[in-house]
Image (cartoon, one colour):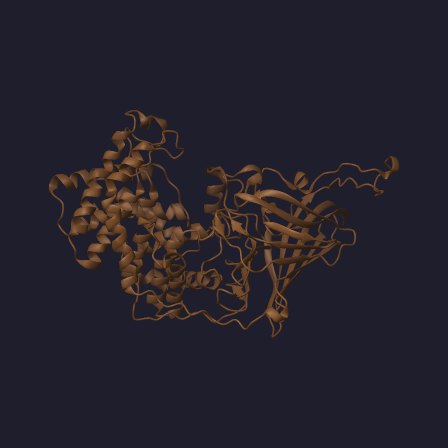
Length: 629
């Protein structure tokens, strides 16, 4: 072992977005606040259409029952979302027809079990002697919410109450026997459901058990740091936590806790020119966007802050203005909560901050570079989040109980020191890898492994590069070509996550430059990797320096990888690239990204192809394998 260190390699990439002549002064975007009538129009239209189409929806469900579904019994969750939506609509409008609809939906819900084989409960060990009426944790709390409203407004006969309470009690018992815990989305959904059942059935003989189990999990989440690093699951966790605070516990003090105030700001600061928080970790483009609208409306009302109304409006205007022909029941439910939580006296006002840390170097561990808040603005999201020291027990529970070895616990990716999203003038120029194509992960850890991200990837040993005709790495006859290993052949494996540490070295903003420098520390492989991202404002360029040095003697092979959809042209050290799609979403625009590698000495250049974000993509790289001390 030695304490000496040597710089192994300096990899430099320049990302050119536009010429100076094309740059205009970017200012904050003007997005009008969502008015109550706009929310109400979507909510009522969706609720009425869903009710009118209920029998057709049930017929479709019956025709598509999947007895091999990995999660087992699956009654349609939209029935429960529609029931909760209906009770919210009663609170908003006073129209009693919505209570009648909610009651009919709940009373029928247990009947869905009759369409499964009588012995289907034997297919999963966690099922009791029969199928639970509510097996799905996602809509469970909404069943209880609708039941509570019906009970409070005396809409249930004794026999009807017995039917619904039997369904609730047997389903709560099922949840108690299949536990998860910790500050994460699924655990919070369980806590919300069990505490809600305990609240509405205070005299049930097992009420204390449900209350104890639910509160034990809820306490892990109330005012605590979440252990996930994934856009979509953040939103699920937040919406469930807000439902628990506002509907179950009826305690608004949560929103004044330092950590919830942090999260209000954190997600606001991440919003991209596309009007949404970019998808990082286990997430897709626009992941769980509908849950973010009530979250931001609650933030605005609690803090009397028009920036959060702007954030809610950004999501609403992107997806729902004008009102789409195809509507979602769950989206309408989210909007009904947004309606009930919103402060409609507040206007919307865009943030004015520019490049900044989001929010610090302990929990958030992200940096946003931006020149404004308009759809045309330049924006880069840089992520250096590792697992960190927090939530150790909860992460270990997940690591040892569920088959997600590819995750950075929990729902995170091997995306340390990676560029998640780069946008300019409404064009997506760099993007993250996506969620997964199969469960628990796709081939080679798709799409969580490091080689699916815009980052430096390091492996032990030295790659066998072979040689092209005329090269003389090998004394082959006539110096003819010798087959070697491809980058992916050498780098790919199961995708299992390898724990590393990250730290911020520096972040600063100047008149003409913004810069961040962060470090990866891999004590197992014996190296440190620094990435310096410099935003040259006058040119609208990004210069990226990657420096890797040994902390232990040995051989390492490393490459900085850049992913794109199309390489239009390329030269000795440059690539003209663009994105046209993210799966089925059109993200094309007028801009293309020029990736340049100014230093090519001793570095292997190349391109390749791999499936990424459910589509065929290309990648570019600089690579070297060598010994160091």
